[in-house]
Length: 239
Image (cartoon, rainbow, N blue to C red):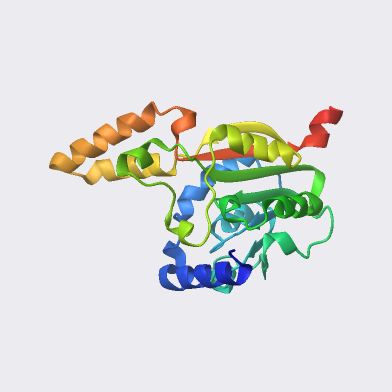
């Protein structure tokens, strides 16, 4: 059984090797800010914040930002990227924040790595305000291009990775007290292919053009990752 110590060691090594290139580039996080429609003078928590690129952008919008990550190496990078943020080395299952502290809570590509999802969601609900909004990015078990390459998931499956279908993610969030407001595709890979297409030549350009066309018409159920915007289930029940 995977332990938090093992997860911490894996991500410490990952961030030590890759630094600020460990995850997606800074500009790729802008779309998540647009999905949340952040208001000024609010407080956002990014769970598994990594190198802090997302909270850096959120802070520029006039939002107070906090972040946690199980990796000391990640938090070290985040402190350099966003010195004004409140950053802590913590597992989501054991957060030390006070009840009802945050207006927004995000988790961008880490829920599938939680060791105890039910306990993690309990903590996320506990530290969020009643009217809080949540944005979770999660991977698709049925991503079309994974079938082409014959494998699923990322390198992070070496430590722990739980892929699910669109329906299974919706059910998981509902079972843990969240109401889904919207679901959109994560367009990071699509936009990356579009940028590569500009400078590509010859047969490589043809391959990228075909890939871009597929992305343009890819249904949500076959996309790379899902971007969920949610609120607490009890808030929806009262309205």
